[in-house]
Length: 111
Image (cartoon, rainbow, N blue to C red; front, side, top):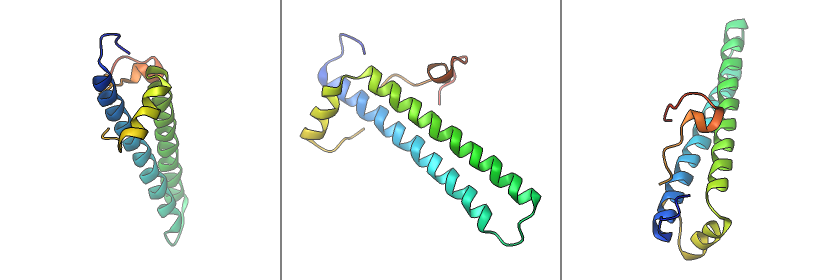
């Protein structure tokens, strides 16, 4: 975290980062349920099952992204910011833009 950032700025950044993390988990959840919906369709064949497996892998990768993103947030922000936020008011959810290189060492590509 930038040492010159005020407490309010840090809280705003944390809230934005947590909102993005929530979006990542929601995307993973939707992918997972879309995969399960494929299994509920009648007349299962190899093509439908292959689509299910692909969607399931996408969901798993999205969950891993969300978990890693949350780990980075927790590493970036001290624990006392989390507890101060919850005691003051409901999160409004600005962390610098997370890039794929943050997660995997790949060239920078914003999410």
